[in-house]
Structures are given as structure tokens and as C-alpha cells.
Length: 478
Image (cartoon, rainbow, N blue to C red; front, top):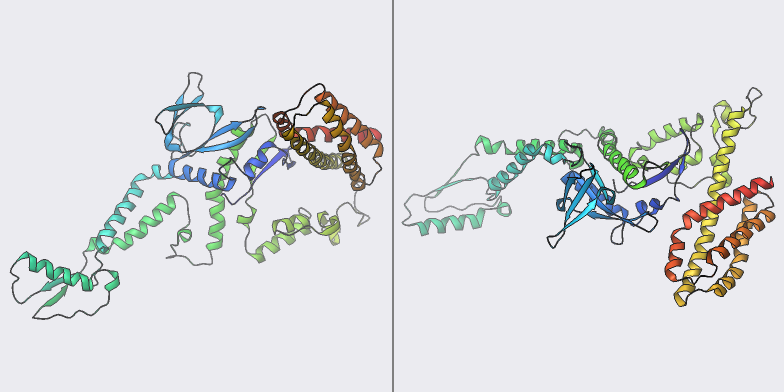
């Protein structure tokens, strides 16, 4: 699970979504979850807790704006849950010094497995503890049966009688030193003075141990819904069906766990008030063999529901240059969607045109947001460098923005080349508003490095704000 990236999407309408890479959680779920742990280790550890304990906990760390900036995993054995009078949950964390620390429900990220009360989850092992216990008992028994490991097992018969226990023990030790254990298996035994070796057959209960061990392996695999071939049990594998079993493993074992994660992220980290949701990327695990994939891709391209660039993305290939791969094809001689490939092609109706323009507007907004995020990041880093040396007074800021205006203006003017339009007037008006906003924000203030850091944290919000201002000015000019 940890190898699958988590994507964030924003729901535009019932059938349309767009990447929400500007959301504060995006970097958290795809980079460092806290100062000690990256997202791979975090997901791996939390899922292990889910499998072994039935619950996975992490403490939420917030910034001053109430955004989650860290998730710190907590061992489930140190957590107990109580229900408050208002039916909210209280998490009692037992610290290493023996004292308890109380967390409210809003402070804890909690993923639970199947539960009997809806509060505390149960691990798959707890649900079938007897079967697992049987397997562990068999393992102990097997160790006892094979610990001595002499092959074959038996007794030594002597012609005479040994006088005391010391002589008996000495003979036993000599025999075991020469023939005991797996490393001595197959050695030739030399017997003397009328000594005979008589092998003893293993009793039925011990002889069935190997078959019982097979049952235990299969039973434990069944508990976790793992195909036997994935735990190296190939006793009944045909190899031809292993690929299909692996795909079914993703569908029926992994995906229910992914759904638990996705719902928990949505309800506990993002919130129901936002149109943003999380989705694990499972495409790489569900892909079939090369021949099957190519047949599926060919059908998708020829029927117009996937573009060539989308197929190339799934195969970890770069897009076709000049945007040619982003065009959708239609079955009529594989023409390009939207082009007049046939006199019988019908024109787009007004609703389709409206939807297309709305989609185009969203893509433009994403582009402008990217440019302003780049501009604001550059501005923020420059201010931080200056603030580390000395406090920023009003004169410092005037001097800084006099120098900052020219490269900022050049960066925005480059957008004109992308949209093939002269936007000099638009850039001038936007830059005027931008500098007025900065002057008003910093007027009569001494700016510390701490305050500059807070400005840096607001870059995502500011980028969206100024992208919309730019889009509005561009629309007014049209």
C-alpha cells in the first residue's frame, strides 16, 4: 500500500474532477508526514498497526490557520478510548513516564478495522485467534519433533549391560555428537562390540505434522486474504493463474483497506465541507500482461475515451510533443474529435460548448495559479533572507519591491506567449493592484522573520487569489 501514491482531487461537478495539488495536505501525504517520517514509512507503519492491532492512530499537528502540518504516529497499545458525555471520543495516551495525556477526537487521526461497537477496531488476528493459536502450537511441536534431527531416529541395543548412568550418558553423547542434528545427516555409523541400531518410526500424530503445518499456513493466509502463492506456498499453483490471483488480491484485499484510508482522510483530515477527496493510485498494480494492456489501450484510443497521452502516462512515458497526444480520436477513420472529418458530423450544441469553455477556464486558472505560486515563493524566500539579517522596516520594503517589480512583471508577460495574446495592459493593472496590496499590508510595520514565515505559509491561498484577479482582468479586456 505504501508504494501507491495518494492523489488529491477537487470535485468540480458530478462527473468532473481536477487535481488538487495546491491543497495543504498534498505535500503532507506525498512527502514528509512529520520531521522524522516520510509518507512511505508512515503508511507502512499505520497499516501494520491496523493489521496487528485493528487500529491505527496519529496525532494531528496544526498551524495557526488551523491547517494540519504534521501527523505523528502513536502506538495503539498506548491508547485507550473513552466516550464523553456529548458522545465525542476522548483518547487517553499513556506516556513513557506513566502519566496520561488526553486528546480530543479532533486531535487524532484514527483508522479502525472491523468493529463491534464502531469505536475500537479489531484486528483480523483477534477475529480468528483460535486458528492462529493452533498454528503457533504446531510450530512449537514441530520444533520439538525436529530439534534433535537424527535421521533415522531409533535406539542402540548392546550385547552387555552398562554398569551405571554415567556410561549410558557418555554413550548417548558420543552418538549424538557423531550423528545428531541436520549437519550430521547421512554420515555412516560404525557399530562395535555387538551393538545394534534399531530405527523407530514416527507416530501418526507426528507424521501428520507436515500436512497440518500446510493447513496452518493456508489458514493464516486466508485470515489476511492473501493468496497462497504470495507467501511462497506453491503446492497447488499452476502459474498460469497467478497473475489473475494477484489482480484479485488488489481488488478484494487491498482495495477495502484503501477505502478505509480514503474515507478516514476525507472525514478526519480534509473535512466534509470541502469538495476535495483522496484517492490511491492503483493503476500500476491492476495492469495485466503487456499483450492484454496493449489490446485494452487500442480499444480505448479507437473508441475515443482515452487519449494517447493518457495511455503513455499509464506506461510511464512522456507526452507526445506539441500536444498532439492529448487529442481524442473517433472511430470514423480515427479522426480527431472536434475536427470536420465527415460532412455528417454534427456541430456541438450550446451545452457542450459551455462545458468546454468552463473546462478551458479551469485550466487557465490552474496555469495562472502556478505562475503566481512561483512568483510568491520567490518573493517569500527573498524576504526571509533579508529578515534573517535585520528587521524589515518600511524603507527596506520599498527598496525590495522596486527591485522585485521588474522580474515579476516579466514572469507574468510570459503568459501572453502561452495564450497567444498581448496582455501588457492586463499585467500593468494586476501589478498595480499587487503592489498596492503589499504596501497596505506592510505599512507602518516592522516585519520580523517569524511574520515573514507566516506569509510563506499562505502562498497557496495568495496564489489562488491573484490567479483569479488576473483571470478577471483578462476577461474584462475581452
